[in-house]
Structure formats: structure tokens, C-alpha cells
Image (cartoon, rainbow, N blue to C red; front, side, top):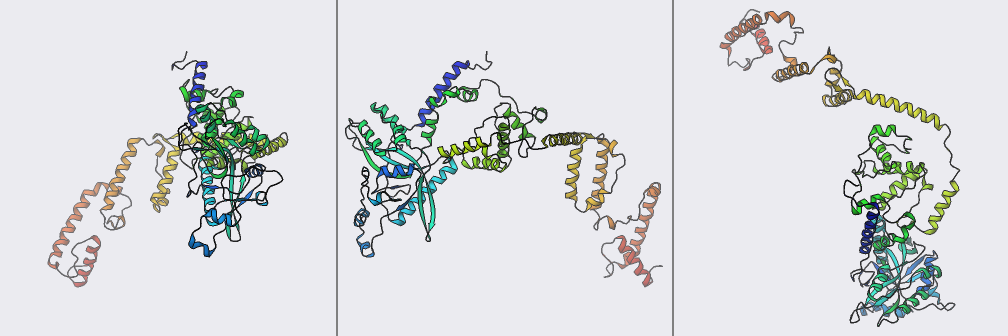
Length: 584
């Protein structure tokens, strides 16, 4: 029986599954605000370009096959035409370019030369075309860096439809989406753009399929057939057949390249229950169930340093790690769930690198997920530098192409059995163990209290280093100072010494020229004078009184100082002797 009122495992799994499904459905924005439902082509937008005078089926098949394209725009109007400001479609026709956005069906063997070259015709003048393409490239790169999700797609075909029988304004929804990547290259002193597919297969507009089925009961064709045949014209025809009974609905054979937020649909597909059946379901993890419906037990505390040292076998570390980083690795390997927090530069990526390597050494698999691609790349580079690239499979952004995945897996398979334990590793392990024991003894010694004051040796060392920097030149002289019986000194005695030093400091501060100007600086030992101090003070007082009486008639003379010191008394006495006022 749970002490926290948690439901039994079977009930908690069912509740978690229901919760996941509700959250999954929320990922699909089925409203008309979603561009996957209601796509528009603003004329001034620099996040998309529209294709004209091309065959969609040819473009799609070539891009999926891995071929790249450059772009060509509508030639700029001649100087004598600028005053008239002709429409771009008029200029396009004069150059033999069909400006229609409704593109033709492919007739095999009858394709025009401009339809089978390596250029995509756009309905923009060259300068505007390059600006738009660069804007799209920058948006795509930002999405990759910030979210790890591609944002550039080629949209092949749209469904024009109405959400109600009486709607006056149609909705335009993408049908086939193909992930693209744009490159910018410098040619003849100017930048030109090149486009290619960054995915092996197209993606269906699941949001549209879900919305249409919910509203009308119509199931749009699955994209599987298109994946197998790469025949876009056949797929668009199948869609047209599926919606033929809906009044005013039709398939638009147009192609748009643009920036599109697709991250939620990707997550929606990843969370499909069918994809998790072989792993025991989406809520098989106790951590997932705890996050969704409450914890099923208490979280354990962090592992201490002593626990890590005693852990058998010890975690295999491939880079430097302090005690807390070792504890984090050990906690993870023991199956504990925890959170590591820290500002930039505190070694989090270093700890993750060690954790992944230690898990690999124990034949475990690790899925490393990060919000931003930069975090993934930092850890991946560390692992590459350590010679572990063969064990890493990048599945983010544009790295998840089927051929790339197969190549990495093939390379990893080739290396299986060829990696051997380095020669002499046992001797190095014994040396490491000896060094660790020495460090442990050193650490214990540094923590031991010294003398009756009970101050740890490490505190004394750090205090000495601090004072050496603060006292500067005086530190060298104090280094020669030996305090007898320091080890047996107790706290009251130390406080008394500190009080006397404070008194000396105050007395020295009253001397205008410092301790070197004190009249008793020649006294190196007070013992001979200790019992005659009162007599000595009386004699000195009478000397001062006599000298003041002798000095009274001379007050006001320019060579008589207004304020007297011992040195000035001595100098004045010598002068008076020279003048005959006193006997020398």
C-alpha cells in the first residue's frame, strides 16, 4: 500500500495513457489560425516563394532522389519599360515564362527543356528573389539552432476547401511537405542560392487529415503510396477523388517553398501509441507516470563522495570530473532520477559526456535530448574528440536521413570486435588506485584540526595564502616570525595576543613618522627598565619642564620651532650651546 495515496501500477498506467493522448491531441492545432489548415501567400512576405512554369511531379521526384536545384527569376524589365511599371506576370510572358500558379501534369517524354533542367523558376525579379531566399535560409537556421527542428519545406499541392457549406472564403491547406535545406554560394561576385532535400521521405499534413476526418468523415489518402512510387501526380489525383463529393473542394496543383512551423506535428507522430508498443507503451517508465499523475515514491537524496569511491565497479570516466560530477554519473548508472542544475561553465556538458561514455562501457543505450541544438553539438564534439564518434547517432534537425543512419550503423558494426583493451591497462589501474589512496590520505590530513585551537589545516593554508597577498611586502618579514608554543595555544591566549597587537597598532598610529621615530626605539629589551620606569618617567618630566623654562624667552624667534619633538629639542640644545646660552 502506497503511503502517498498513489494508484496501483495498472491504474496509474491507464491514467497516464489517457493523459498522454489528451496532451497529444492538443499538439494538433485544428483551428483556422494554423497555417497547416489555412495557408496564405502574402505578396510582401519574405518567408516564401512561389514556383511557376515547372512540373510538380518532376521537381518532387528529383528532390527526393537527392538532386539539387538553383533558382532563376524573371529578367528585370528593360530601361524603357520601367516608367510603365509593368506587372511581373506581363514581363514573364514576354520572356516566354508561364506565370500561372496552377502547374501542369507531367506527360512523360514530352517535357519541355525548362522543365527538366536544374533550375526552379520563380515569379520574382532576381534581386527580390535572392532577398527572399536569404530570409528563408536565416529563418531555417534559427529554427535549427534554437529548437533543433527544420523550418524550410517544399509544399507540393494544396487542398482548397470550405469548413462549412455556406462559407464564402475557402481554406488552403498544404498536402505534401518535403523538408528542404538552402545553401548560399558566391558566384561571380554575387550570392546565389541552392536547394536540396534534407529528408528521404515526404511528410503528410496530419493536422489537415485529422480536421477533415473530424468535420466530414472523409479519410484523405495516406502518404505511403507516394513514398513507394514517388509519383506526385498520382497522389494528387487520389486526393481529388477522395474529396470529389464535397462541393467546391478541389486540389490546387501549385508549389510553394517556405518557412513552416512543423515541430508540433512531429511530436504528435512520435507520441503515437503504435510506435511505443514494443517498449511496453508510452507510460511504461515510472518517471513518465510520476510526471503525469504524481510521484509513486520518495525521491532519494544525492549520492555522497564516499559512496562513489566505494562503488563497484567504479564509473568509467573519459574526461576530468570532480566529486559532485562523479556522484551524478554514479547516480545515473544506478538508475536514479535527478536534476543537475548549474550556471554555464560549471561542467554540465562534461558530466553528460562522462555519463554517456560510462553507460556505453556497461553496454547501455543513451538517448540525449536537448532543447537547443548547440547543447547536442557540444557533447557530440566532446565524444568525437575522445574517439567515440562510432557509438553516436545524430537524430536531430537534418541529421536523421535514412542513408546517414544506415552508414553510421554500418560503420559501428564494422568496428565491433576490433576494439581491444589498451596494453598495460591493469598496471595503470593499480597506479591510479595508489594515487587515489594518497589523495584520500592527503584530504583527510588537510581536514584534521591542528593544535588546541581546533582549526583545520586546510583553513590555515588558505588563510596564510590570503594574508600573503594582502600584506604584500610585510609577509616576508612575518614569515621569519616564530611564535613559541603556538600548537598548545588556546583561544583565550590567542585573543589576549590579538588585543595587545591592537594596542600596539593604535600606539604606532599616533606616531607621525611611524615606529622608527619613537624616542625609545633604541630599547630592544624592556626588562632592565621594568622596575625603574616610574623614576625614569619623573626624570624625563623634569628635563622637559626645565627645557621649556629655558626656552620661554626665545619663543617667537624664527629659528625656534612652534612644536617640539625630541629631535628638535636636541637640535635646539646644540644651537643654544653654540650661541653661549647653555653649556654644552
